View 1 (cartoon, rainbow, N blue to C red):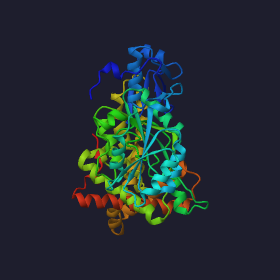
View 2: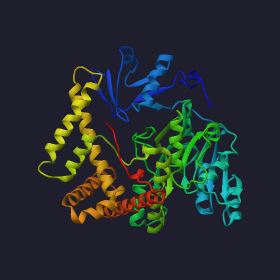
View 3: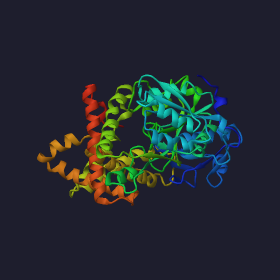
View 4: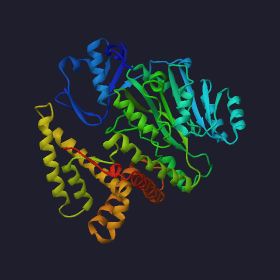
Length: 469
């Protein structure tokens, strides 16, 4: 599907607001931030249009500026004035039995039109009864095709401009989905997702349930923006999504039939590769039921990990578990060692990075200070990425090397400390000891899934970091 550039321009009255986490330099003429990080220099007219950090589209020039800020994750859309009618959106719910969860899901979606796709349930009459009680239409499949195939089957029946996919173990109300749909006021937006938060239904949650509620694999955090490989948010979970029906059913072809894991990541990356915009909006929440046993909880983590090899086979190094420059990699490793030479090595590597970065900044005064701030942030991110590699993606190698290498043991202990510090700083309502045990089991299960997928595909590509020069 091809669309003329003017048809994809932001409409008059569309508003954006600069993000709060940007670095402002040179009297507001230079904006540094976003993900991946970039520097944008504003002309005098552009700066005058950003009154208090807000910009309203009034003509072609302001539309281009707003688009540049949005695409760079330097600004977020302001959608409070936009309304989407109920008649614009249909919800597709794939399900296989799980009638109790389905009833809860459908009750929240009233009064939106809903298509329940019964993916060859063992008791289809119970699914039909629940759907009928909530006014939903049922489309039954005779063969189990998995969630991706079931969503595609429902997508083919949708006649509204917008479609929402909501899994049966997810609860989100109609207002939340319509809030997500407002992002489609931007004609380039193809797909949008909310923050998916773990939900415990048990009155007395067990330790792993409390952890999963606080650190669900589907919870992508509280910072919204454009979703793309290499950005702060690189994918969206298919547990809850809103998108354009014609685009998903036509040009994109929907989810990959036959994929039972990572089909959501694949869809997002194919959309981005085709020039479409995918957005993440954490101001909208969807509740996702946590797993009820340790076995199913860890089994799901392992299952998620197995999808890495499929993604690597199709999308190459976009699936890389870390993205590092050589100097940042050296800084991170030195700091993980906690030796007398760690800070000097990290300082030299940081200075080299800042010296290379400073000339690239479109700035005269204060260039070195901005480069130093960016380098400091990059060093911290390098430490976090390398800690994740040791504890999650490369743990089998680290476990084999630890008995024979003091360096590896020291790095592992530092990595655990870094991981727990970051985790507990962001989630203060979790018991530290329970979180320590749960995070290590989480990492072991997911990492094992990654390795199993790599062995099945006979390719380590999903385990290899990507270096930028």
